[in-house]
Image (cartoon, rainbow, N blue to C red; front, side, top):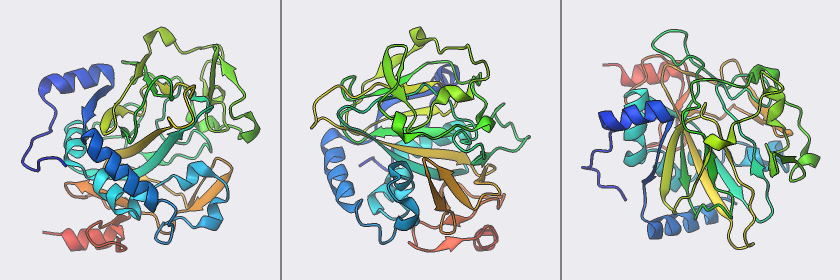
Length: 323
């Protein structure tokens, strides 16, 4: 565990590097032995969905949607999203008032394809419906985005499909997420792009390109090999993807992405559900988590992770924390 007296805020030099490159890391959040122990406990908890906020019958066989937001019912993941080593660094970038609005597991098993090069600004990419909305003022980025903290729960290697990043590509959006994409699960593991098996979980991210003839400059990319317990923090608008899994069956890769925005951002604006990957999940029981600072905007429903199962409406939160 991290030393609660430690200071993990980014230095001026680290912030300058982040602003230029769009990412920082890998950074150590847990020792490898501790991460292995935590992951063993987490994976035993995953099959129990008795406290999960999304009903099983809404998910069907849609693996991607069932991977969402287990920090809201698994205690070790709830603890993880508040890890000082992550939250203080993200707060250095986004400011002191911080929400975690989504978490996702990203497994990769033997034979799995790599992930398409992509950028995410509003996360409308599959359905065309924005899932986060920045205000037009208050020094918002030019086209939004979220800060993703991607933690390796297992070894992440070139052979088992590690992340790939293109430093410095976070300031220009090459995709129009409002276009939406067509879902076809029959294409999974069956497409090659520039001699690499890549896809986007049943979608083809090239459908969102502003210029159909544009191709990512892979000469700018590098592969991010990570030890268990290491984390990389990056803008979701940074060009990123992953390699295919070409290793052995026992050498699977498990990543866990935690997504953060400042409290001024609206989460799931005007949405009652999330529809993607061939399934739909209702947002009736969804709530963001305040991981740092306070919420002075009241845009979003929040949950108090210290009182499990209690959810604040925006007005409850203002009343509870006024003064």
